[in-house]
Image 1 (cartoon, helix red, strand yellow):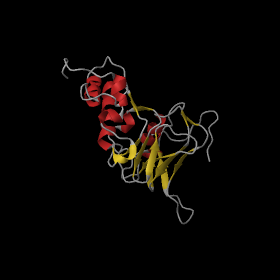
Image 2 (spheres, one colour):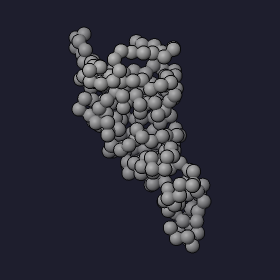
Image 3 (cartoon, helix red, strand yellow):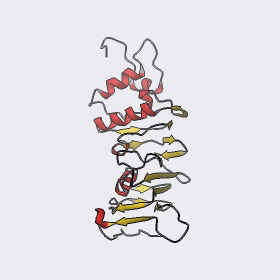
Image 4 (cartoon, helix red, strand yellow):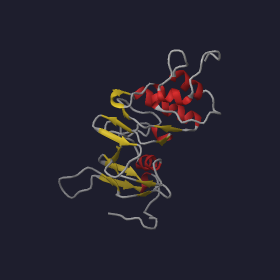
Length: 220
Protein backbone atom coordinates (compact mmCIF):
# COMPACT_ATOMS: atom_id res chain seq x y z
CA UNK A 1 0.00 0.00 0.00
CA UNK A 2 1.36 3.40 -0.96
CA UNK A 3 1.45 5.40 2.22
CA UNK A 4 1.37 8.63 0.19
CA UNK A 5 -1.89 7.75 -1.60
CA UNK A 6 -5.18 9.28 -0.44
CA UNK A 7 -6.84 6.84 1.90
CA UNK A 8 -10.59 6.21 2.10
CA UNK A 9 -12.04 5.59 5.54
CA UNK A 10 -13.12 2.11 6.54
CA UNK A 11 -16.76 3.27 6.45
CA UNK A 12 -16.31 4.64 2.91
CA UNK A 13 -14.65 1.42 1.80
CA UNK A 14 -17.43 -0.76 3.20
CA UNK A 15 -20.13 1.52 1.75
CA UNK A 16 -18.38 1.59 -1.63
CA UNK A 17 -18.24 5.40 -1.73
CA UNK A 18 -14.48 5.64 -2.22
CA UNK A 19 -13.50 6.76 -5.72
CA UNK A 20 -10.60 6.82 -8.15
CA UNK A 21 -8.90 9.60 -6.21
CA UNK A 22 -8.90 7.61 -3.00
CA UNK A 23 -7.74 4.15 -1.99
CA UNK A 24 -10.08 1.44 -3.31
CA UNK A 25 -12.19 -0.77 -1.06
CA UNK A 26 -10.04 -3.78 -1.90
CA UNK A 27 -6.85 -1.95 -0.92
CA UNK A 28 -8.41 -0.77 2.33
CA UNK A 29 -9.50 -4.34 3.09
CA UNK A 30 -5.97 -5.57 2.40
CA UNK A 31 -4.53 -2.91 4.68
CA UNK A 32 -7.00 -3.80 7.44
CA UNK A 33 -6.19 -7.50 7.11
CA UNK A 34 -2.48 -6.71 7.42
CA UNK A 35 -3.00 -4.73 10.62
CA UNK A 36 -4.03 -6.92 13.61
CA UNK A 37 -4.47 -3.79 15.72
CA UNK A 38 -7.47 -2.75 13.64
CA UNK A 39 -10.50 -4.59 15.07
CA UNK A 40 -12.91 -4.89 12.18
CA UNK A 41 -14.67 -8.01 10.99
CA UNK A 42 -13.92 -9.09 7.42
CA UNK A 43 -16.85 -9.15 5.01
CA UNK A 44 -17.23 -11.02 1.72
CA UNK A 45 -17.91 -7.65 0.08
CA UNK A 46 -14.38 -6.53 0.93
CA UNK A 47 -13.18 -9.31 -1.34
CA UNK A 48 -15.49 -8.56 -4.22
CA UNK A 49 -18.74 -10.30 -3.29
CA UNK A 50 -21.92 -8.92 -4.82
CA UNK A 51 -24.22 -10.62 -2.30
CA UNK A 52 -27.33 -10.66 -4.49
CA UNK A 53 -27.83 -14.44 -4.63
CA UNK A 54 -27.14 -14.45 -8.38
CA UNK A 55 -23.45 -13.63 -8.86
CA UNK A 56 -20.96 -16.36 -7.91
CA UNK A 57 -19.41 -15.17 -4.62
CA UNK A 58 -17.48 -18.36 -3.83
CA UNK A 59 -13.98 -16.82 -3.92
CA UNK A 60 -15.00 -13.75 -1.91
CA UNK A 61 -16.73 -15.74 0.84
CA UNK A 62 -13.75 -18.10 1.04
CA UNK A 63 -11.35 -15.15 1.32
CA UNK A 64 -13.40 -13.66 4.17
CA UNK A 65 -13.40 -17.00 6.00
CA UNK A 66 -9.63 -17.35 5.61
CA UNK A 67 -9.05 -13.79 6.84
CA UNK A 68 -11.33 -14.29 9.86
CA UNK A 69 -9.51 -17.44 10.93
CA UNK A 70 -6.08 -15.85 10.50
CA UNK A 71 -7.03 -12.74 12.50
CA UNK A 72 -9.32 -14.33 15.09
CA UNK A 73 -12.29 -12.21 14.04
CA UNK A 74 -15.81 -13.12 12.95
CA UNK A 75 -17.01 -12.99 9.37
CA UNK A 76 -19.63 -10.25 9.07
CA UNK A 77 -22.04 -11.44 6.41
CA UNK A 78 -25.22 -9.52 5.56
CA UNK A 79 -25.85 -10.44 1.91
CA UNK A 80 -27.19 -13.43 0.01
CA UNK A 81 -24.11 -15.28 -1.26
CA UNK A 82 -24.28 -17.80 -4.08
CA UNK A 83 -21.41 -20.30 -3.91
CA UNK A 84 -20.58 -23.13 -6.27
CA UNK A 85 -17.80 -25.00 -4.43
CA UNK A 86 -16.83 -26.26 -1.00
CA UNK A 87 -16.10 -23.55 1.58
CA UNK A 88 -12.92 -24.67 3.29
CA UNK A 89 -12.75 -24.19 7.07
CA UNK A 90 -16.27 -22.73 7.29
CA UNK A 91 -16.69 -24.65 10.57
CA UNK A 92 -13.67 -22.95 12.14
CA UNK A 93 -14.93 -19.41 11.53
CA UNK A 94 -17.22 -17.33 13.71
CA UNK A 95 -20.12 -15.53 12.04
CA UNK A 96 -22.19 -12.42 12.62
CA UNK A 97 -24.92 -10.76 10.57
CA UNK A 98 -28.11 -11.97 8.94
CA UNK A 99 -26.55 -13.24 5.71
CA UNK A 100 -27.28 -16.50 3.92
CA UNK A 101 -25.30 -18.85 1.71
CA UNK A 102 -26.88 -20.74 -1.18
CA UNK A 103 -25.44 -23.63 -3.16
CA UNK A 104 -27.75 -25.44 -5.54
CA UNK A 105 -31.20 -25.83 -3.97
CA UNK A 106 -29.90 -25.44 -0.39
CA UNK A 107 -29.71 -22.19 1.59
CA UNK A 108 -27.93 -21.90 4.94
CA UNK A 109 -29.05 -18.99 7.15
CA UNK A 110 -26.27 -17.48 9.24
CA UNK A 111 -28.79 -15.97 11.64
CA UNK A 112 -31.72 -18.36 11.34
CA UNK A 113 -35.11 -17.16 12.51
CA UNK A 114 -38.61 -18.62 12.65
CA UNK A 115 -39.48 -19.94 9.21
CA UNK A 116 -35.84 -20.62 8.24
CA UNK A 117 -34.49 -24.16 7.95
CA UNK A 118 -30.80 -25.05 8.12
CA UNK A 119 -29.71 -28.48 6.96
CA UNK A 120 -26.27 -30.00 7.58
CA UNK A 121 -25.49 -33.14 5.57
CA UNK A 122 -23.46 -36.11 6.84
CA UNK A 123 -22.44 -39.34 5.12
CA UNK A 124 -20.08 -42.17 6.00
CA UNK A 125 -18.45 -41.50 2.61
CA UNK A 126 -18.12 -37.78 3.35
CA UNK A 127 -15.26 -35.76 4.81
CA UNK A 128 -15.10 -33.39 7.76
CA UNK A 129 -13.10 -31.10 5.43
CA UNK A 130 -16.34 -30.59 3.45
CA UNK A 131 -18.72 -27.82 4.49
CA UNK A 132 -21.77 -30.10 4.74
CA UNK A 133 -24.09 -27.52 3.20
CA UNK A 134 -25.33 -29.92 0.52
CA UNK A 135 -25.70 -33.68 0.10
CA UNK A 136 -23.00 -33.54 -2.58
CA UNK A 137 -20.39 -32.30 -0.06
CA UNK A 138 -21.34 -34.00 3.23
CA UNK A 139 -19.44 -34.12 6.48
CA UNK A 140 -18.26 -37.51 7.76
CA UNK A 141 -19.29 -37.33 11.42
CA UNK A 142 -22.32 -36.27 13.42
CA UNK A 143 -19.93 -34.65 15.89
CA UNK A 144 -18.68 -32.23 13.26
CA UNK A 145 -22.25 -31.34 12.35
CA UNK A 146 -23.44 -30.54 15.88
CA UNK A 147 -20.22 -28.66 16.65
CA UNK A 148 -20.84 -26.55 13.53
CA UNK A 149 -24.39 -25.81 14.69
CA UNK A 150 -23.01 -24.75 18.07
CA UNK A 151 -21.21 -21.86 16.34
CA UNK A 152 -24.66 -20.26 16.01
CA UNK A 153 -25.81 -20.93 19.59
CA UNK A 154 -26.15 -21.14 22.47
CA UNK A 155 -29.85 -20.94 21.53
CA UNK A 156 -30.56 -21.99 17.96
CA UNK A 157 -33.47 -20.24 16.27
CA UNK A 158 -35.33 -21.57 13.27
CA UNK A 159 -35.37 -25.25 12.31
CA UNK A 160 -32.13 -27.25 12.33
CA UNK A 161 -31.69 -30.69 10.79
CA UNK A 162 -28.71 -33.00 10.49
CA UNK A 163 -29.47 -35.13 7.44
CA UNK A 164 -27.71 -38.51 7.63
CA UNK A 165 -27.11 -40.77 4.66
CA UNK A 166 -27.70 -44.45 5.42
CA UNK A 167 -24.85 -46.00 7.39
CA UNK A 168 -23.19 -46.71 10.72
CA UNK A 169 -21.88 -43.64 12.61
CA UNK A 170 -19.67 -43.02 15.61
CA UNK A 171 -21.30 -41.76 18.80
CA UNK A 172 -21.13 -38.03 19.48
CA UNK A 173 -21.22 -35.59 22.38
CA UNK A 174 -23.79 -32.81 22.38
CA UNK A 175 -22.12 -29.38 22.76
CA UNK A 176 -22.40 -27.98 26.27
CA UNK A 177 -25.25 -25.48 26.81
CA UNK A 178 -26.51 -25.72 23.20
CA UNK A 179 -30.31 -25.65 23.03
CA UNK A 180 -32.96 -25.11 20.38
CA UNK A 181 -35.31 -22.17 20.56
CA UNK A 182 -38.72 -22.21 18.91
CA UNK A 183 -38.39 -25.56 17.10
CA UNK A 184 -36.69 -28.89 17.68
CA UNK A 185 -33.21 -29.90 16.50
CA UNK A 186 -33.54 -33.04 14.38
CA UNK A 187 -30.98 -35.71 13.50
CA UNK A 188 -32.50 -38.10 10.99
CA UNK A 189 -31.67 -40.76 8.44
CA UNK A 190 -33.38 -41.52 5.14
CA UNK A 191 -36.86 -43.00 5.10
CA UNK A 192 -37.22 -46.74 4.53
CA UNK A 193 -39.97 -48.71 2.87
CA UNK A 194 -40.27 -50.94 5.94
CA UNK A 195 -39.70 -50.35 9.65
CA UNK A 196 -36.00 -51.10 9.45
CA UNK A 197 -33.23 -48.74 10.59
CA UNK A 198 -31.30 -46.92 7.88
CA UNK A 199 -28.88 -45.35 10.37
CA UNK A 200 -27.14 -46.75 13.44
CA UNK A 201 -24.95 -44.93 15.97
CA UNK A 202 -22.32 -47.29 17.28
CA UNK A 203 -20.34 -46.48 20.42
CA UNK A 204 -17.71 -49.01 19.34
CA UNK A 205 -16.71 -46.57 16.57
CA UNK A 206 -15.74 -43.91 19.09
CA UNK A 207 -17.44 -41.38 21.34
CA UNK A 208 -19.51 -41.74 24.49
CA UNK A 209 -21.93 -44.63 24.86
CA UNK A 210 -25.44 -43.85 26.08
CA UNK A 211 -27.26 -40.53 26.32
CA UNK A 212 -27.22 -37.78 28.89
CA UNK A 213 -29.65 -34.88 28.65
CA UNK A 214 -29.64 -31.39 30.07
CA UNK A 215 -32.59 -30.07 32.04
CA UNK A 216 -35.44 -29.27 29.68
CA UNK A 217 -34.16 -31.41 26.81
CA UNK A 218 -36.72 -33.49 24.91
CA UNK A 219 -36.29 -36.58 22.77
CA UNK A 220 -38.81 -37.55 20.08
